[in-house]
Length: 398
Image 1: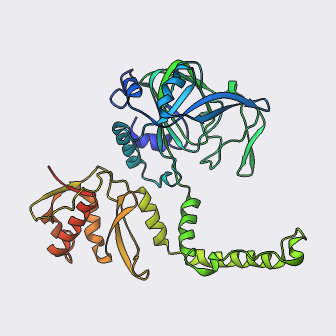
Image 2: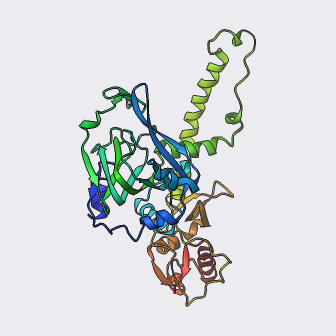
Image 3: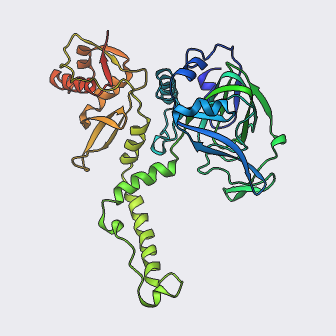
């Protein structure tokens, strides 16, 4: 399946299963690594119920005891995104997605689920995109073909079949009967994609080991509210607290008139703030999180670039840039070139043509950059390229 077909037909819209050969994911992860390389943030899962509704409980366990809980028959879970092959896989997915991630809420992670008995998770949905790789054994899945809720921000509440689990968009979302959901079984080399909001209940068929790469997203309202918080948080009126209740206001139970007036004034002020919000700040915040360069900073400052050196991007990830208000003078504009990990290089607004050409190049000779912008002489070109080397956006070609 082509990547553009996946994003057009499935991404965020419906589930997808792709069958593979048993050794398809061997280069990424295998059971030998699971046995020998420690996982982090390890947990064990056991099954219980509340008011007659089945649910799964997750309890933290020490990483050193993971295999003991596994041998005892519990489902064990641990993070492995710090392992090089998994980190590289996640970087590739992030580079392909190119949208603000969930890293602000620490959603992006890779988890390994291992069990030796018939156990799993009760019916639920996740808030993130799931990319599931079956490593060993078999796992049976009950799952919806499409999200019950598009881009949910909360998990489903505990409710029996046919009962409301939560309300979204003015409608009750009912818990389905497990037996009414489609079912399938994953074997080694099989891949399953599930968007956020898809009901599912996985269960191991004896021994099973799979990886779930969970990639979150930052909702539009969250990005805008985060920027707005920074902007209005610098203004004294918004930082003030609410007045303390005194006298009759303490005992009436009603919202005092002066507090009602404060809310009304806040709404009026908020409308003004939104009308005056500099859209460049939204552009900057979006670009800051989309940019993913994983070459990393060099340990020592690089020597200045020379004219005849060949330079290349540190990774295949596109170089992301935008125009935004200057941090020194908000009335001025600068070009921000993002290095990932919330780092960036700032250049004058006049460098926009130079940066646009830079973003289109995969590898080039430094001297050729003199042709990108007639207003950029060698000292400016050399300084900009050296700074990009220092931030790990560019590297010297081998």
